[in-house]
Length: 326
Image 1 (cartoon, rainbow, N blue to C red):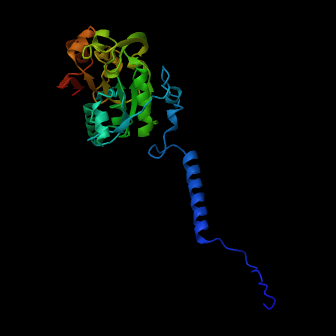
Image 2 (cartoon, one colour):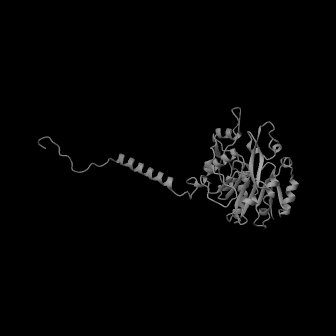
Image 3 (tube, rainbow, N blue to C red):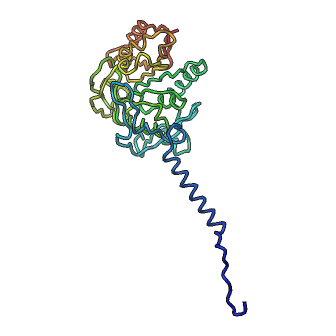
């Protein structure tokens, strides 16, 4: 114009492409956060199950262990397990003697390797895979007695099986809670802070410091392999499996590893084990004669008892016995 003034455009200014893209990205991230925060937890692969903090009510005679009500274990070192068909993680309960003799799995982790495969994990998955192929799932439970840190429980849960896990040691329960969170199986794994036995009550339990996996109801049994480790006596709740598992509840597999207390666990499951062929569970239990004798029982006593409830087919696999009604 002649006077040098420039007329302002009457059209509104448009955002340049770069700020517009940033705005859209921010809105997308906000929507994604809101979706993940408030969506239903029906898919455990996408979000941790809310049952980790608020277990759904079930007709059990003892309370379920509530992970969010227990102190968090720390430090936490977890990793995937190598060479299993259905991978899962577990939290390492023992770091070894640091810094001189670290746990082997800690060394493997520092070398970029997965945790060594626990034999029981591969065994559990192999048996359950066979049951799946035969169409024998039908909502049946896996019962893990002496769950330790979950090497059997999580091996089953990541395959989609529901698990009842019995474990009396608080430190192990904390690691079970780690694994429930890491594997997103809160809807599948129910944990009880109890020792399965043949009576309801309480019993003295001996925790072995530095080797909690060797803790036992027998003080002698707890220290058989690690005589120099300190033991701590605690009182734990005991309950028979028959008091927990309803007659109408199918059970596919019963795994027992309780450092010599196996006979008492089996006796407390007499009704469960007396079910007819096709309904009675596959049994895996540790059959270590030294540990059994430390608890005033024996392998023969167990086999004789199992015969009375119809288990005539037992085979030895290392220190474990596998029994079925064939």
